[in-house]
Amino acid sequence: MKIYRVNMSEAKVSVEDVKEEYLALGGRGLTSQIIGDEVDPNCHPLGANNKLVIAPGLLSGTMAPSSGRLSVGTKSPLTGGIKESNAGGLAAQKLAKLGIKAIIIEGQPKEDKFYTLKVTKDGIKFEDTSSELLGKGNYEVMEKLLVEGGKKACVMSIGQAGEYKLEAASIAVSDPEGRPTRHCGRGGTGAVMGSKGIKAIVIDETDAPGVLVKDEEKFRGAARRFTKNLLNHPVCGEGLPQYGTAVLVNILNEAGGLPTKNFRTGRFDGAESISGETLAETITERKGNTAHSCHPGCVMRCSQIYNDKEGNYLTGGFEYETIWGFGANSEVDDLDAIATMDRICDDIGVDTIEMAVTIGVAMEAGIIEFGDAQGAINLLKEIGEGTPLGRMIGNGAGFTGKAYGLTRVPVVKNQGIPAYDPRAVKGQGVTYATSTMGADHTAGYAVTANILDVGGTVDPLKKEGQVELSRNLQIATAAVDSTGLCLFVAFAILDDAEALPNVVEMLNAQYGLELSVGDVTELGKSILKVERKFNEKAGFTKKDDRLPEFFKEEFAPHNVTFDISDEDLDEVYNF
Figure 1 (cartoon, helix red, strand yellow):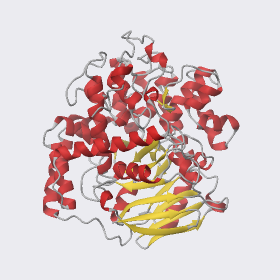
Figure 2 (cartoon, helix red, strand yellow):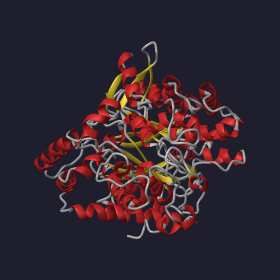
Figure 3 (cartoon, rainbow, N blue to C red):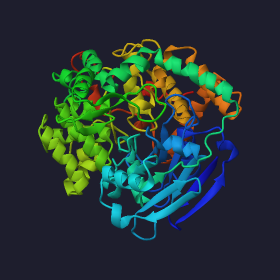
Figure 4 (cartoon, rainbow, N blue to C red):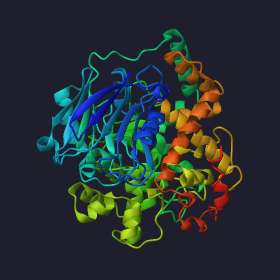
């Protein structure tokens, strides 16, 4: 395995051996460590001193099930702190098969140009693509580059939002059909890629050496057992393939935790119209695909292909958080309108969660009315057009809220709060407040025990046990994010005592190690400590580990508040 360093200031690529301290790291563990080691926490995130680190997980490129997650690390232009954003698609598997441990992109071009990086078994080459790709959306970029490079390649690209260096800009990763439906969405990674003068990265694994597994027989046995762990779990093996993540719409609505009308209430009267059940029925009627894999080897298949009323492709990878935000949070109950918004976000390259929260804030400000689906679509289009209003929206909820003098702005560390109200799902509220990444549901997914009774049960409406739940999940998640495994494997790991040992056995068989389950926990802790240290040096204090004060308002239907004390929140990282 090698690390490639791309110096954009000198248009030069160098190859480095992997440092000994990096050998056992991958994915988030590696990106955060490199950012912690090499980036000044006080640098401007869009300046030459920030870096963009791309790394596959430890198990990526192998036959481990659902192991195709890619991590991208940087200093976030949205939060000002450390950021790891990950995505499915084909990039992680192809990079791993090429023997690439990480790509570190640094510096900035001396001229105002955009480049495409071509990654093959022979290394990385630059191509000036300013004239042919600049100003184009991700769909057009990927179609053009995959025609030129062959359908078996993978493309990572930015849309217009990344070119404009907007704080909600994402990096799109092509799915198996070559479409930009998988995104490193959160935190503005696309803006950093744009600041480096990179429009796209094409990864071609032709004649790649593949991934070395030291004990193939032992690895295959553990992989088969872990596949059974996943398929035998009711969430991983049944709920996600049948309904996708949108299965949560009705569940959260019933629990009174579905944030509606910019977090005013926990129930949406139109929930059934945008539910996972309705989504699956619509997809089936229009001959789409309800169980789509975002990368080869995914056994949970929670992605899907959504067609329009005429049966033509409209969007893919239609997630619960996107449907919640453009739906309940905006009081829109039209799946086709929400799917159109998802398509626009994928094309112009913006995080659907940040944009959904921002649309809610825009409605709060009176730019458009709650329930105005076409108005929301028009606002998103303005981002791609680069209008002043579009650039404001594209810089996220915090920026938009400040521009209109609002106090009801659901952000933590300036990042939009996703689809679970902290008052009705209190463990999730602890995660939002304290995560190193800003408000991020995946950083410590307390919905497991709060709502789904996975890994035990912690009453979502009571404060008892929430700090411990979030702490343990944040530690576990940091470790999972390093393996390249999809976060949803956590459902099986939490409920099946044999699942995590099978993951550890795969790692041991691949790398010739003797890790224990306890070592995985220690890895998670060490990653969080690196990230926490970076943020502290960047100026973050305990005061940044707080929710907006309006979450102390009572919240229907349960008439509860977020009542976990500041002192308790400060205990999360005491490990």
